[in-house]
Image 1 (cartoon, rainbow, N blue to C red):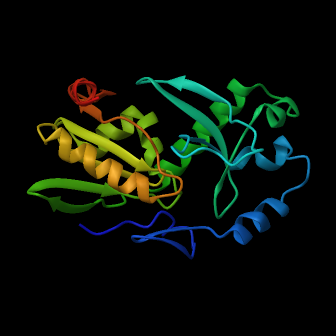
Image 2: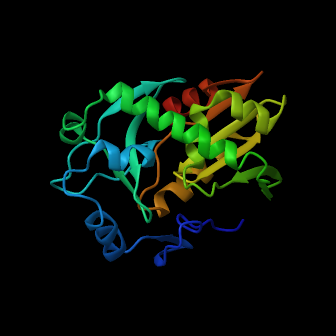
Length: 226
């Protein structure tokens, strides 16, 4: 199975090995320096997006991002698209704005819906692993994982057949048949996520009859292993 690039649609050029690439420190610093020092609401509102927190610890001194619990039971942070990367939003930034965190998050969701709508007909790639079919989706907006927050869009994209879904990194969402081996699906999620510096630590999800939930069969198996 081919490796996917963590930043292939964002013009990034630094390789972390195993086909995973990401922004250089210089690119990120340049993007942050281009913003006004006060990180004003008017400047950042259009770039707000919901983001999942990466599995690796944040660097020392970085303010902890604010999060909210969203269906089907996952914590979601507020982020700003600054071009080569996403910048988490912490308490200090929100306190300087004229809106509440909840209002800012709803703006982020509106921005996400607009981005998803603009690429509604992007075709997913298809590959197999050990005979199991997987559908790969990467968005031009860099947040394919956040389709998990848009249940109706998931149902439209994946049809009536029950599916398993995994999001090992921010811009990658994979779907497999519901009866796929959970150990294989979980292995693929961890294999990709651990190679990406911003890899995610999300559970396996189930999409059944248009409703998204955390896959309890996979959760029970994980509990038995540990």
